[in-house]
Length: 113
View 1: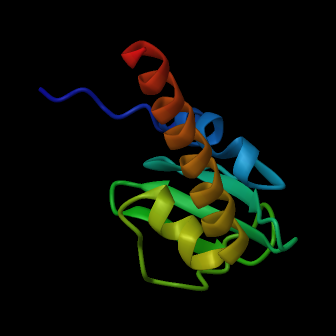
View 2: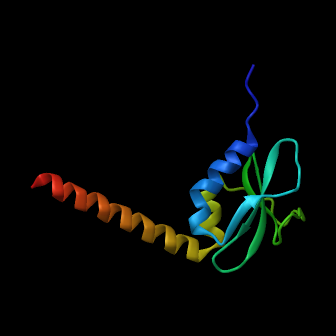
View 3: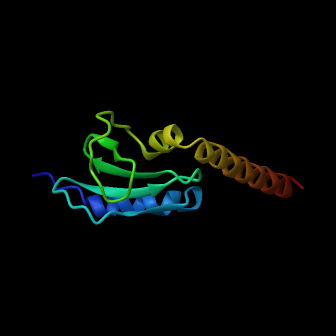
């Protein structure tokens, strides 16, 4: 028998990886049996409630702690969702990747000498 997915652990993993790229991200007070809701505020100050379940990530409201079913479209990853709802997320993510790549390139040069 397959173990049920721990949606709160999944949500915590998303929160930990994205907290620096958003104004706010937290687990919502809304309860669902087969998933978890996230409250997200983008760098553009837009608020969303997102359902994370076996279908993926789906925007369910443009406010915290609500499910008004605004979209039936689900994203496979949180990267895809956040890139779609926030241009600033994409820009900041790319900047952080560039910084990390420069750090790696710098450490490679140091070991070559």
